[in-house]
Length: 176
Image (cartoon, one colour):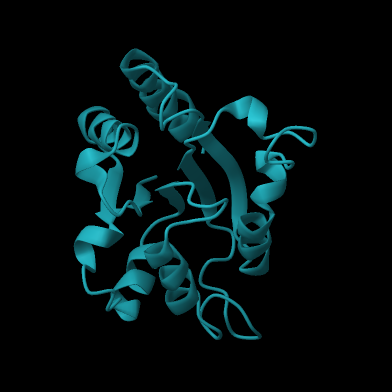
């Protein structure tokens, strides 16, 4: 089965993690289609019909993005709002995402130990991902988890990023 990877990074060329993830996916997988939202929609004018058709063509979808203020980049939010529309993704006649395998790949700038109840952030990553899981449940897709890397803003080394990218491709992608 082919996989669609939707990348939502506003500046991927200067990304330490998402750029490596993308390059590793392109080099090591034949059954992956990459779709970059910020490249496709620099003016934020999303072609909803195209996006919906893309999603219908794949059984597996990964949404890849940097964690921004405990959520997603703004264009990805708009993409969710526009593309997962009533009557298409949800509602009495909205079933186009039902049973599709949907996963997340998230780069997180802060350190992992800060994502605990008694740490500075005060919430686990799993708790902060609740809106994503609720959306995936609402559209009746099959949530397959999240591939992550912490410390991408300052702590993680280039070697760790390359190793993490291999895990993304060899283990996480393969498990979908």
